[in-house]
Structure formats: structure tokens, C-alpha cells
Amino acid sequence: MSSGQARSTQPGSKSLGLSRESVTEAAIGLIESQGLDRLSMRTLASEMGCGTMSLYSYVKNKEDLEESVVEALIERSHLPSIATEQFGSWQELARALSRAYRDLAFRYPRAHELLALAPYDRAPASGHLEALAQGLQRAGLSEDRSYEVLGALDAYVVGFLLVSVRSASGSHEPPNEATRRLHRLRSPETFDSGLEVFIRGFEHRFSEQP
Image (cartoon, rainbow, N blue to C red):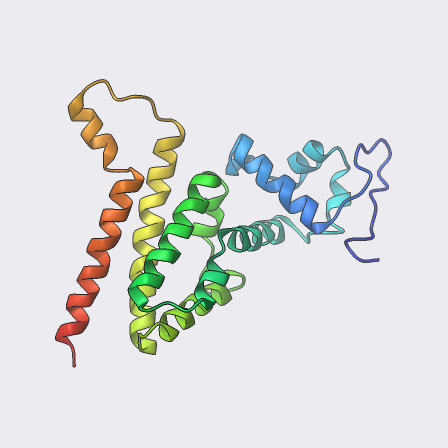
């Protein structure tokens, strides 16, 4: 029986049907409402109104569940489709990818950490990053330079947003101008200006290399 056809058979279950997609969606909702550290098969089953064992028809274990969440976030970020579009330069693509990831992070301020910290050497992150590197190559970079830019871009975007989004989710109006200036260091505007510095730095670097 496929995941789309299977039904929960646990006595007293509130759920009429389950699927890998619905389990993943519920996991994202749980993370956003209660935090990443609260994610467990038992807690998720309780939230979905079914028995814990019912979930194992759709996800193998917690690690598989987290990978499914990462896959869903990658798709919702639109990064894969952006990477296949035609851009006039790698700089334009870098801006589009960075801003798409920024928007995802603010949309899913807690769940996006799973994507940010996903292991790069295995799926789904590995294939995703390969696709982004190929997009940069189509936009004009050599293979070596595409990975160089992607690595630095990933470090900047992920590092900035892991801190910025957490700060924004629990922020309040700073009491004075000095603290307001510090608060703006983690704003979307600062993210954009830092991205431009990043791009200009690589332009300069590449112009000096043969």
C-alpha cells in the first residue's frame, strides 16, 4: 500500500488518513509552534491525533522525517526553479538565490534551521547544492569558481539568517537610537547591503585572476 493510500488504523485515532506529505506538514507546524527541540515521533503523533507507530508507515525514523522537512523547505524556497532560470550574470543569480533563502527563513524562522544545518555530503542537501552550483556555471562562472562562490555565499546567508531570524522572532522596539542602530545590524536591509559587498568582493577577486 502506498503512502497516499494508507490509513491510520490506531484505535481512537482522530486522523482519517495520513501521508508522507501530511506528516511532513505537521512536523513543520510543530517545529514552528514549539521549537525544533520538541520534534519527536511521539510528540508529532500526539499532535496529529494518531498512534506513534502509524507514522512509521510514512517515515522510517526521526532522521527520515527531518530529511522530508528539508526536502519540503527546499521546494518551498523556489531555489531549485530559480537556479534553472536564465540570468544575465552570476551576480543576478546570486542575488535571487540569496533573497529567496532569506524569504524562506523569515517565513519558517524555526524550521529553516534544519535546512541551514543539513549535512552537505548526503541527500537532500547534496543534490540541492549541486544544482545551485550548476546554475552559477550556466550564469557564467567556471566550475571551480561556482563552488567557491556557492561556499562563501552559503556561509554568509546561513550565518546571517540563523542569528537575524531568531532575533526578529523575539524582538521588541529598541529603547534608544544607539540600540536601534545595533538592532538594524540584523535587518533585511543590512542583509542586502552585505550581499552587495560579498558580490563586489568576488568581482574584484576574479578580475585580478587570469
